[in-house]
Image (cartoon, rainbow, N blue to C red; front, side, top):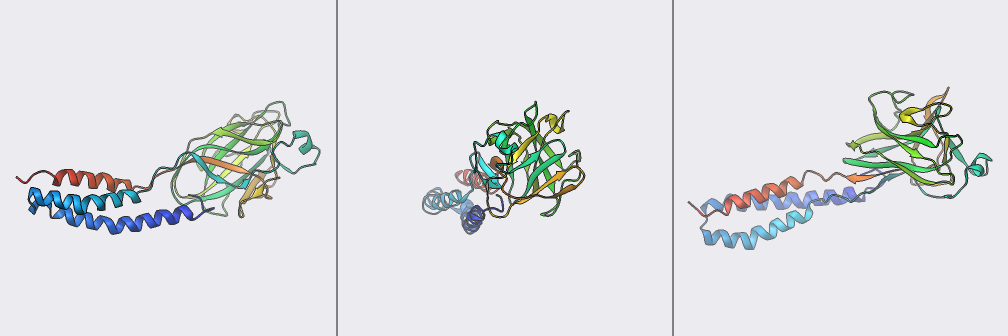
Amino acid sequence: MIRQSHASNRIVCQSQRKLTLTLPRIAANLSEFPNLSTTERSVRMNRVLVPAILTALSTLPQAASAGVIYQSATLNGAGTSRQEVADGNFPGLSVGINAFAGVRFELTQPIVTEQVGGHFVGPFSVEDTIFGALVRLDGPQDFPDSIDLSTPDVLGGTLLRLPNESGDVFGDLRVELQPGWYGLVFGGGYQGEGLFGARALGAAMGTNDDIGTPSYFGYLSGFYWGPRLGGTRYVITGQIVPEPLTLWAATVGSLIAFFRRPPV
């Protein structure tokens, strides 16, 4: 999961401890099977092994359904018109060909992303598409390796269409991410095509409520990468990849099938 919450990590650790205590008991009983009669095997299976196996299986982590994996802030101020932002009545952070905005986040277990997006408004141009990209980082203070996002640390990008009235918008982006630090970056284009085919100038709304202390950063032409103010909302949806503990289930099942054979 994300460092934003430790609850799921505690659940996984508890499951691992419970499984670690249960599996030796299963293995010890299975090792005695070749020396048991058919009747003794049946009794041992029903009284000891079946309850132990059910306990082990109940601790295995399940695949999470698709949902929000990370969000830098909760949505606030939706429905603001682009004109209100242009007039300075509401805060907004420019997202264009020379202005990128994003946030760092840390994963503590593998995930598969499905969409990236956030709270945006626009366009302030003829075209209406901006891009979202995922970048691998070396740590909590790192920035992308290139200003044009052309280096191998960029894992993929997608396009999002800007709404005339502010709201959450998303683009499809499926990427497998391992534990570590990453950046979610948004940018656009103006008077010419930008990265990933983006052609619009928009704004990331600054009216949202930060969750914790997000590590916002961005790029501005002439100033390279640097920190950015809070209040912007960036979101990743996807699924947590189940841990390999489920392999124990297949192993136990195979052993049971083998040892349930009648003695030769």
